[in-house]
Length: 471
Image 1 (cartoon, rainbow, N blue to C red):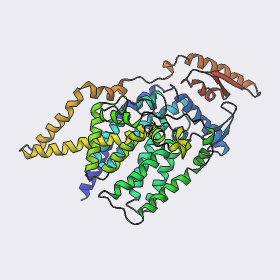
Image 2: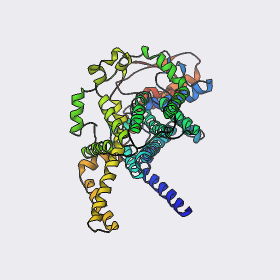
Image 3: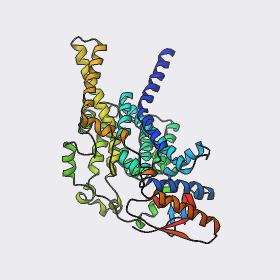
């Protein structure tokens, strides 16, 4: 028995290591070339500001004079990204520059993203699905608002990806809460819910959408909840809300002050058409899209632990990433804040379920094919060899492999790729000296073009207040 236990642990570790392979390939690139395009500069500033201005004054949020003529720092946008970078600041004992610390933190995100995707897929479908989900997550080219390389690396909106990691781990824990009355599970679930909420506000919508579906799927599935399961689930969510209350309370109190700059996306008819023609996600291989649809069909028809939940969640995210809430149901009359949502971001959440469904479809097809091959007299070893060959054939088609390997060849937009970096360095040297030699109160105004946030990085170098004059 001890030998079997050791073998099981070894197999688990080998599968986890396999899931982390894409992260191990990608991470060194961010160490060598620090990503600074678009939002990256702002995230470096926010991490520096959080750990040098807010934390020393005993605050996790609050008024800051560094931007504009002052702003409520980390009240409309949470501080989870700053905490993540700060964690690596602590782990490196503050011996690295802020830029280098940021690069290490971003590389660490690649490993954490692969790990959370693996745990998410493994918990509901098994380790093979977890490995496939991790690989697809790391190799996803992505596009605007939909996650993937284009979104978290090129545009630098990686806190959404980090929040998605906590969302996945939170859903795993919440599912356990439905089966166990352990106080430890309830506390762990609440902690992951809180981490997701204080990392990006999109998880508010994601939890509101997926948690009821988790309950529905379990109610009509083979898994049965023990005792007052719903009460435990509500308790875990309430605990998470309390832990993140320092952000949620000011966030909701300030929503009326924010602009209605939401994105309604396309009508449901167009969304359905794109779903059936394999075009739901941008830069996504059609083969993977249809495998996801097969996984949805198998999930709805089967009796697996997570099949119904994942199928319902994936379809719901695709549906609500349309204008159905506003232009069809007119729910903005009841919830005016709906017009502030960029509903396209739900496609990012949908991918969290789509990738494991792809793995589920592949493993189910492999299981059926293996049974057929063994039924016609092939030995198990030969049958497995034939299956590996059959599943490797699609990799020969560029339409399948090109979107996936694009990230492995794509350059990271660091300082060398920024046309203004030389000017930035000259200005930083000058302004740092001015700041050192005067005690006057002043700020530097910058004129930017849309999407260029490089000047927001300047306070990290010169500790000088800034003002965005226009574009």
